[in-house]
Amino acid sequence: MDRIRTDASVFLAGALGYPALEILWRGCTHPTMALAGGLSAVLLFRVNRDLARGSLGLRLLTSCGIITLTELLFGAVFNIWLGMDVWDYSDLPCQFLGQICLPYALLWGLLSLPFCLFFSRRRAN
Image 1 (cartoon, rainbow, N blue to C red):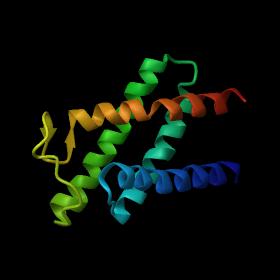
Image 2 (image 1 turned 30 degrees about the vertical axis):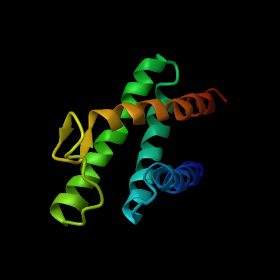
Image 3 (image 1 turned 90 degrees about the vertical axis):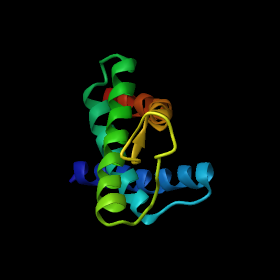
Image 4 (image 1 turned 90 degrees about the horizontal axis):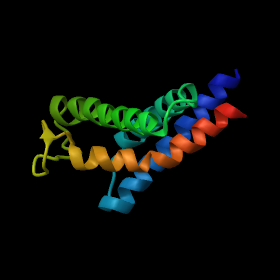
């Protein structure tokens, strides 16, 4: 039961935090970003908890990959398959299918730093 509560709390934090970051950055968001944020947060929590003794660089790279792959998955479903046009990175450098791009992947890696530090500290307690 504790794991369910923890996952629910982490999901809620991501579901609120991810869209909030988008609103601050782009001025708008979409409800699907709450789902992406919640899923990403739970995955980040579990990976960083399990890799707590690993290097910070590995945890940042893994976190960056998790968020970027989540964006690719959500982009493939909501933007490409369902045609919702939530975002389009086609004009950005090093993009893939207009759904992910290197600049935002690197930004997600940087923004993962507080999560990596906090989640790994939770493991130690």
